[in-house]
Image (cartoon, rainbow, N blue to C red):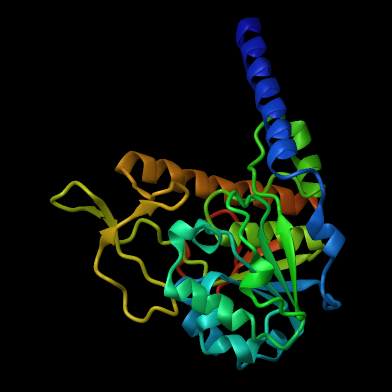
Length: 297
């Protein structure tokens, strides 16, 4: 690489690094709230299961319920898991929300309100992790009726961009995150901050290219299936939830965002190894190729 290109790259890295720290200072602050709150009676083996919302989770939950090792693991649930039949029986220690629909009025629905109503009746100790970024000042405590059994802990969500030598330092202090597209990545990041040494992923299919098509109105559509939704739906238009109002994806923007999502898993795998932790992908048929695979038999 020529001296000119090296100077140009160094300049870009410097600008990215300064922009990142400036954005954190303005939007989120530098407090590592996850580490300060700590874990809830971490099991001696330091194992945690993160339950994604892929369609494979239903079969995996049936298998796990028959195994003694399941009782030895802590659990983290995501998004609408509380509306499933397994929620009360499992009593997860941790719960994480990160989609804009959970804190923006534009995404409000009966289903979202039902989720918060269900969480308001939790009668065991549980930590609810939510995004620091909250432009509408959504009151999570009020949403769960100020349930004394639920601790609400914000986590940082601005993806790190800048000098690689500072990347893992930022992660160790809770800055930046695995927020490259899915709530599961945020869950992995939180689990690493809490000090878990073995993170197991269930129901993390990530089959984000299945059923992808463009209809006669030039709308990008996809078949969306979650384990709690029953049969897969017909392909429907997909929208960028981060915009208000939501804007439709184009093929190029969707594929670019999907690529960045999978790159996020590579970032998390590197960081986990630097902390002496293992991430096991136990989801059969998952498209993630970044983690050690150990599907359930």
